[in-house]
Image 1 (cartoon, helix red, strand yellow):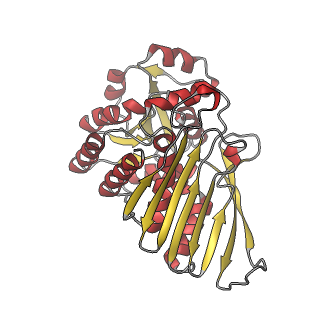
Image 2 (cartoon, rainbow, N blue to C red):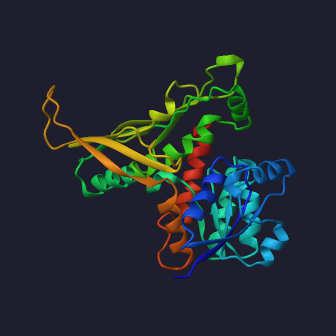
Length: 333
């Protein structure tokens, strides 16, 4: 089996180390040629992080000369798009962590560049590959839930460190930009794009932090209202990440959307309850579904490899990613 030869650029993104650990776990599928980190502070931090043990830190020029099959872009958010553009310009496939630039035009131009060069631009929205989400979307596609009335998506955190919430202030939408992007992607993949966007982002001001650490946005569809919520100050918020899809024939609730199991921080499990077909009023006719633990990034990276190797077409088109990004930015107002 041919390995995909990859180089990661950046170590500052929240998912950077996890991506490396997953690549190491999938050593029969991937070969890590090196890590590029041009920020001296982040480089020093990464060299002290055991997640990067046994990996070479190299320059960008050295990375280009090694001619990898693809680059993984895991820089801090503001550098995701310009770094990805450099790699696409040089003729390389790109896996880019989310959500990309705060500027709609620059992201749209990135998608156009990748399409023009016939290169993979793969966005790292990990919930697209969550087993419970895949199951729920299958119910939707098969019509088992009937006509979809609403999607309710939550991705919360409990950041006790005020510095993390101050850091959110660099983004116009705060938490809606940082994590709400995941939820907007899920909603759109289930319901399509909305007719109206109603942003209600706010600040909890806990601990004197005035960044938009409470993201909330409602979306009007033909059949009703959907919403996404992402709160950085919710007690036990990490375990109350959920997705509820309501249809005319049934409902499925995934809660928690993921929870860490076992000893590995990358291994997650999902739980769901569904009701289909029969409305029993106050009687509980739901069934519980347990999904086997999976590595959070495994399916995503394996699908990226298949796209680069020409074994499958990326189901998320350049046009979809550009339009999704526009919606994310509009939701951050």
